[in-house]
Image (cartoon, rainbow, N blue to C red; front, side):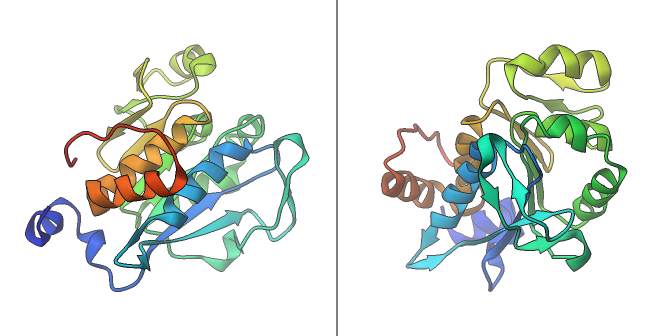
Amino acid sequence: MNDSAREHRNPITHYSKPIEVGIFIFDEVEVLDFAGPFEVLSLAAENGAKCFHVCTIAVNNARVVARNGLQVLPDYSFDDEKHMDILIVPGGHGAQRERKNSAVIEWIKKVDKTTTITASVCTGALILAETKLLDNKKATTHWMYFNQVEEEYPAIEMIRNTKYVEDGKIITSAGISAGIDMSFFIVQKLLGKNVAVETAKRMEYDITFSADV
């Protein structure tokens, strides 16, 4: 892909600094939901330079206890008002709680106003659904939660049997490991197929890429 085509596709690729990615984390977040995208985006590089700066963000600076006891110290809290080009909202058992947390919902709506991409992994779609950012859009989530989304959020058109769905600036992925595939899609979308292929090779991750998206 030439530079003019890339510029037309998405101006974010012309930032002089790495693209800023924030991943929201919370107690009982599914580990691979946030660690998968963190790994893919952190490793993506072009001409030896990292393409993304990836950080974790939580409601406050306290230690987050993810699923199965993994403890994580967030890089930032909501109070830091960290700028993000991309926001990723993972899922996990804690997502059912966080979607009813008004501070979380208002923060996501605020951050979304300035992101180029707002994304969810797995049941992170439930949190995005609560913000109404998915209203009148196509989306996906973990297969076990399709019925819940359709019953509680009828304004969302749920798409089954897919790894991820893009609708405008919103990208949602299916369950857990699908967040990795979604992250490769983001790499390819913003930086082209070659960068995505090289990142997958470095990770030894088996994935088939289509033509540039």
